[in-house]
Structures are given as C-alpha cells and as structure tokens.
Length: 341
Ligand SMILES: *[C@@H]1O[C@H](CO)[C@@H](O)[C@H](O)[C@H]1NC(C)=O
Ligand SMILES: *[C@@H]1O[C@H](CO)[C@@H](O)[C@H](O)[C@H]1NC(C)=O
Image 1 (cartoon, helix red, strand yellow):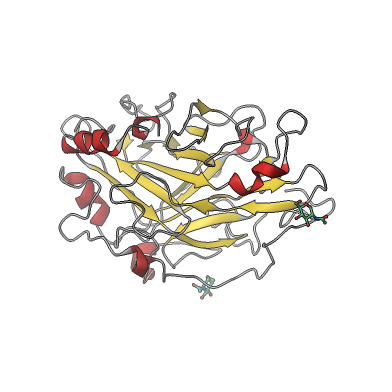
Image 2 (cartoon, helix red, strand yellow):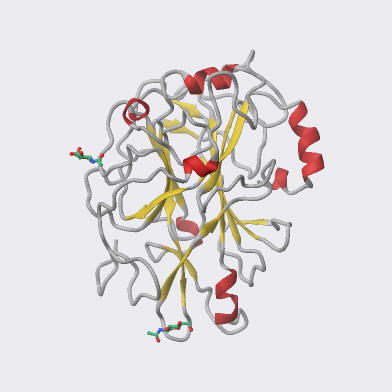
C-alpha cells in the first residue's frame, strides 16, 4: 500500500501510535486449480490459483476451518484462514508460450520477510492504520464458515475498487495504477487486494460471494473507512493482502515499444480481472481477541502467537489436481485449445 512506501524508520514511528491492526506474512501453501469459494467442489477449478494459509484447504470447505486445520503457512499461528488469487503469467510475445510468474515475499516487513517463501502479506485493520476507532465502530470478527471474494475475472475495463497494481523499482513501489504496468518493472509487479469492511451480519456467503459484504472504500491505500450502511451494518476487520510478483526474469523477453503487454492472469485475463478470495479460519475467538486489543499490531499478542516462518514453511496440502504447471507451456492450465473459463 502506498502508505508503506516510506522507509522502515518512518514505518516504525508510525506503528507506535497505530492500534488494533495486524500485518504478517504467509508463505505459499500450494499452487493448484482449486477454488472452494467461487467454485466449491470443482476438481479442478477453471483457473490456477496461488494459495496461502491453513492446511484444511480443499475443493469444498464448510464449517469451522480453524478447528479442522493443523498447520498454517501464516506467521500468526492461530490463523488457519486461506487467502488466494489467480496466478500471474507471462506470455512470450515471440512464440506465444506461457510461464508462471512466481511471488516473492513482500518488503519491507519489520525484520525482513523472516524466511517467508513466496506468498503474500496480510493486513487486518480496524478502521484505518493511524487511529483507533473501536469506541465508535467496534469490529466483529468473521464467524466460522465465512467466505468472500472481491473483484471478478469477467471485468475487462476497470478492476473493482481496492484492487491495484504498482511497478516496483528498487525499494519504490511506484504509482498505483489499475492495470498491469505498461513498462518493464525492475523489481517486479506489486498487487494489492483489498476486501470490503462491512457485512450484513447474517450470511456466511451469498450467490455471487460478494453481496453479503459492502465496500465503503473507493480510493486506494489505507483511508478512513466511512460508516457501514444499514444494509450491511457490521464492521468486520478490513482484510487486505499484498503480493510482489517477480517479473524481472521476463524483462529481457519483451519490448514495451513493440509488444502487447505480456503479463496476464491465469484465466487469460487482463488487469481489470484481478480478484481475490478469502476463507475465514482463525481458531476460536483469536481474531476477535486480536482486534479488541490495541497492542496487537505487527506482532503476536497474548495467546495469539507468531510462529517461525521456518515452521510455517513446512505446512502443505496434498496435490489434488496433479497437473504440470512448471516451465514454458503451450496453454494456461485449464485453457487448452478452445476451453475458455
Ligand atoms: C477434502 O474434502 C473431501 C470431501 O469433503 C474429503 O473427503 C477429504 O478427506 C478432504 N481431503 C483433505 C486432504 O482434507
Ligand atoms: C519460447 O520462448 C521462451 C523464452 O525465450 C523459450 O525459453 C521457450 O523454450 C520457447 N518455447 C518454444 C516452444 O519455442
């Protein structure tokens, strides 16, 4: 997020008066065609995803995920939620073959990435990142079984509010833009996936996986979220995640002056189709406890402990789909000749 472009020193000063917010890395758990939120039961789902979080991840996920999972790739040891996105791809302009663009740990994190592998960085914020507003608008943690998505692969002109891109060069994240950057990014492409902060208070899901939630935020970055509307009166933690995609190894393979933008999402989609999925899975009332404690920021707090990323990295799930996703490929996974999702 734009707010975090400044130096670590500034960031540390900022943390001192920030309350009720969490920020932590989660390593990649698995990369498969599974989507228990948008396509429950589908083995495989339409397109490839990069997935992080708990090992209860499966094609179908109902009930209390936090009670079922036994490990997580997230630093917060009580967070067995799953977070996933479409995978980024590079399509070679010369021969038309595809290659996965893998994520690298998001920087800066206090103390570095702590050994995270790939994955993403998650935020749970209470109001914004500069002020504690618990008295005015208490945050209610999600109930077991809750899931939501943001954005849609069918959008083709502009992404959903809160979903964005930045062209990274060195430690600068660059200007926030609404599609894949048009030039070469010397340090990769940064994507932000910002979920709505309001909930109807009743539904664990909805037919479109979105209408049980409401997005009050229309600008990018961390801004003061306005009050939730009567239709969706419950303020839930604002979940956001960020990913750094390592596009640098593809920079020598294209010419921005001649070639069409070679980056795309795994559904052969352009920048507008960026989307993200969330399956709540914190153990018991741990998320509620974290959000109620103003000292819970950037760190474990009380019984909500951090685990070493070396431990988190050992968490895995089985390969349900067993398809080859590595190397240069003639088709995107699931998109073989004529099959478009
Ligand atoms: C995945 O879900 C199926 C169907 O609910 C279940 O039978 C299976 O045990 C689950 N697998 C794992 C590894 O959790
Ligand atoms: C396509 O181009 C890439 C990058 O130059 C190369 O590594 C790959 O082998 C090529 N694939 C085919 C089928 O020519």
